[in-house]
Image (cartoon, rainbow, N blue to C red; front, side, top):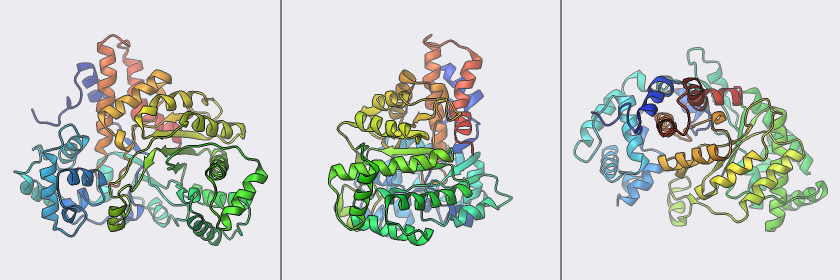
Length: 468
């Protein structure tokens, strides 16, 4: 039997049935990724499998470094052949790492290659992949269409023109909707100089003279409306930690003025200003029925020497810890709720020891006011939790403390056009988990309820939740 088959990752017959009959062929709603709308629009062929597979993939880069591969063959100027060979040799050491599974899911699904990549066959597999990439079926739009993707949500700065999203919207022969996501990380910048740089650009773009906090609110609302017009229905935020510090309107104004004067704020002052900005933005999102994503818990670019050499987002990030997370998270959501500013919200936790904190927190703020079930969501296992163990932990915490039936499911969080097999990976893990419950007698073998559960999590909950 070939390695990738309908039983892969599923060790019980009930799970295999759920996967084959329900989950396997459902369309994909990829509501959070890092694909480039320009690349989708221009639809250029890839030079070779190394460009498609290894360029920008810091997951693979971390593994290659651990396997003793020189940086020259990772992010340096080594040839495509040298880089691919180095990756193939690393794959042999990846047992137990999801990279091994992702690699072979992609080879099987997109290239029809059933062999397992290793140091003995890398050249044959590379040549076969490169031959495929000469075909139109391997251009970006074709790969997206072949992956049965209904919606893609990219990640975009508030200052972005969204030119390519508009162009894609007018492409009649490309059916997948490519929508922007509002990612205002710059507004949470602690460094006053970097903060001022963003404020200056925002003022110039919107024509609003930003002197007070209310001016900042109007300028951000201006950009939110601009994004909304292009189809955006989601925001995203990436704080390392989540704190909440209450402050009056006048106190917030003073803190904003102080930061705009170039002065550094104390830790408590910064928490108060950031809290006010979060609540302000959340109110604008709620008015437009957007969903707000918060990805928290990543401490980034820890190897400062490598950051200086090759930049950020290159594979030197870690899971963070935080004191008083429960207090900060509950306080922030409570402030939003008290100000009628709590939108549909998805919380992604990077540190798995906090899973139950997140799962019990979201239960405090569920309501029917947004017209959707479970408006506050516990997001899928993210980044370092994008593994079998990480996904099962998140699913179990959510099932323990909330309603798994209403979960909005998986996303790629990827920069690769062939990472949609991560949805398949998640679906296999989900079906195996639920199938195990059935076979152990922990839930009834009720076809209607089980069908609703699997289809909701894999597709329908996201469709109903985001309302694209």
